[in-house]
Length: 223
Image 1: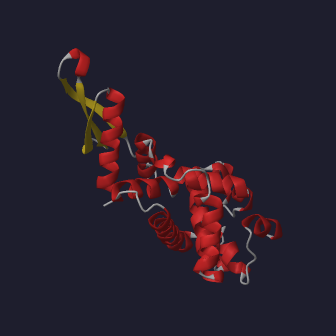
Image 2: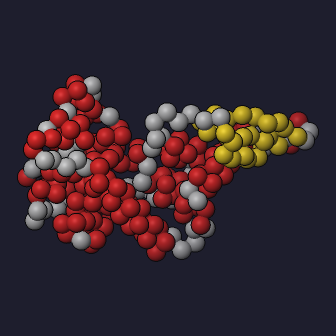
């Protein structure tokens, strides 16, 4: 725990909060006699703290960004892929308490488990040290990673990461048609989520149309 706290840049007053943040439900279920609590409630709280701190940061530091770009940037910064990078930097996988079956099945490397653990750790820091301490952690490990605006520009990637928060989600891009002469065609694309249309977009190329369709889908799914 000492090494992990050193990596976190935060020392807990109540270390049981950190231990709970690292306790997966599979471990808690296998050890019910010990009265252990899994990290699921902390994950719920951490998700909200992360979203609020990120939104506040973008609002204050990017005054010229329109609402749509703010929404897309926040979604990209707090997505599973972003949190997995944090988990790997911290070595959280090695610290997790997993049930035997989950551990044997590669749970320590599972992106969803790693991302959930990061959110739980954020909540643990928040409960132990307040919003200031949580903000410092989020700033260091998430918000200070390069250009936070550029991260939102690939709308297809951002949409993929957004829907992957739930398992079994299927995205499909469909070309609806093209209009205009060969030298100035306008393509129209629809993006479907589990067979249901969630966004359409137009562009001078199929790639541009897909990006605009993904951007429309993100706006729909995050409102």
